Each structure stands twice: as C-alpha cells, then as structure tokens.
Length: 79
Image (cartoon, rainbow, N blue to C red; front, side):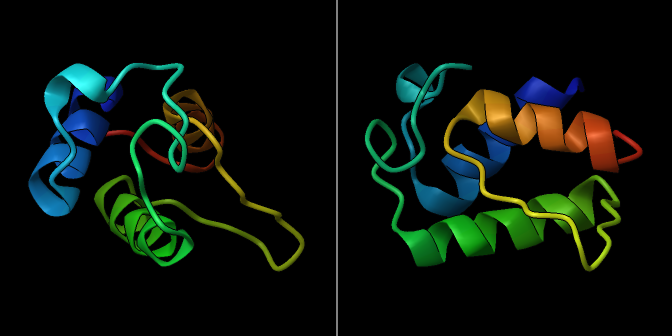
C-alpha cells in the first residue's frame, strides 16, 4: 500500500472521513473537519505507522493531506 492510500485509510477508519473528501489538496480542518486535537491524534497514529523520527527542533504542523505525505517522506521509513 502506498503512503497516500495508507493515510486515506487512517483518515477514513479512525476519524470517519469520507473517502471522496480525501484528496491530496484537502485541508485537514476546513475540508476534512478535523479539530486540532484530532490532528494531534492523527500525527501520533501516522508517526507509529510510518516509524517517523522527529528531533526536538522539528516543527510539524500539517495543514493538508499533502503536508502529511511530505512529513512521511521527510521523517519516515514508509510502509
């Protein structure tokens, strides 16, 4: 499964987001209606799933699905 499909599955399964609303350009709060706390939970799930490693100086604040994919590319091992 590629990273995009895996992120879509997490958003759909864990947060109840409809598949048709999940696009690379979708805004996490505006289009997908995720609250800030849900975005924190999403990042924790993604960090576990993709084995992300952050340093203390990394600032992670995704706004879109594409941002999540960029974070996975930069900090993760993929799946």
